[in-house]
Length: 250
Ligand SMILES: [Zn+2]
Image (cartoon, rainbow, N blue to C red):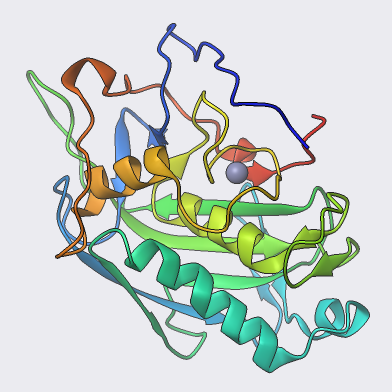
């Protein structure tokens, strides 16, 4: 439906097929605050309403029962799609995801209590550690919690059918998980982390892979082309309120 990827200059003029979330001068990652090191992250779908007064996105998370029923998706199917979305990132980078009870999960997934947009992610990191760097790039912040929220008033589906008004749950979750592990929207289209919802691929693309590998290292046994030195994206401050996925027309 769409033509070939069109490049657009990022802030600062850099063209980049991936971009890391940068808040307060540094990127964010789970696990050790060292680029390219592995992490294990817990996740859960909320089973009751949870409030996060400080969150810019997903300030209220509700159980998904209503959203799933309205779209004729059973819970087992949703859980399978969610596992597949996490697995797609684990397949390419050294990051693992473990389901746990919702009280302790680091990544929480639910329906928006106040519906807007399609889907958003909120990220929070450990602010007790002050990063002091005299030269060179700042080490990443240590991610503390991420919230992923889906709009229960929008229509959702399982699988691609070419109708870009109804979003595939797995694709959307995969995109939002990308935010939840530290990736922002790149300036190039044709990547899973592009803010536009498209139905052209189902797994992370080259730039997505370079980005997640920069944070967590490659999954052992996978060959990943490292970013050429000149192509490493410049750190550009992220807008947390833009960690969303949108219709392609926007
Ligand atoms: Zn997004």
